[in-house]
Length: 267
Image 1 (tube, rainbow, N blue to C red):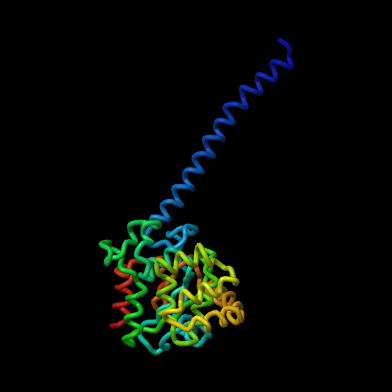
Image 2 (image 1 turned 30 degrees about the vertical axis):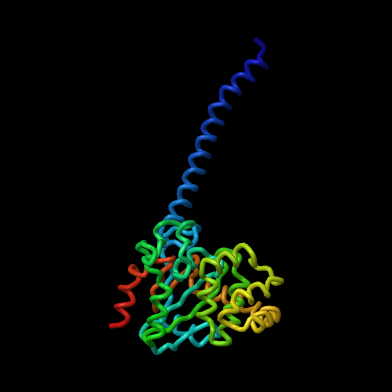
């Protein structure tokens, strides 16, 4: 046998096992990463599957939260109330839809953990519970946009417009419903030419001609960016992220897991 053939066979004997080892390693890593993503998606406290829930949350002072209520944001109440709620969210985010409690079918796509109590589940959506405290004068609330899932620009601009007319909650509840979530994510997305579609959808709670004119004006295009920058400065981790005073709740938490922080603030 020639030296050339011997060398070729030796190289082959070395390479084949090495390639097998590499393939096994890649398969293991791929499987591990996939399982992590699946675990995040199943976790009832995670808004988007990009962050490890064991990661330490950034410290935000109560003064920083209070200062938000002096900014040009969608907000209700003032800094003198015992509880200051902040929600960073995206109208196209499924976990935001769950947390706001108006979409009764969203759990079918994100997990049984998000089946509402009204539908036989154990999930108490925090959004409606927070609003009760805001309406009763015990809490204040600020809403900040961040594109956690990428299709919410037109929906968010419609909320800015509705807020001008004192119709934020009415428009919000429609957009976060089953039908609104489908409209935002499959029909409208970020298409500015769909302003009429958004306006017609909200026509039962606000003058559609106003909404269309407001959307077409582009007056809130820059607000999308300023909201995002503010969210980042607060240590945004994913949509939704909540603050109860200076305590961060990064994800679509069950209200029952947030209640102790609220009860403590009310004392």
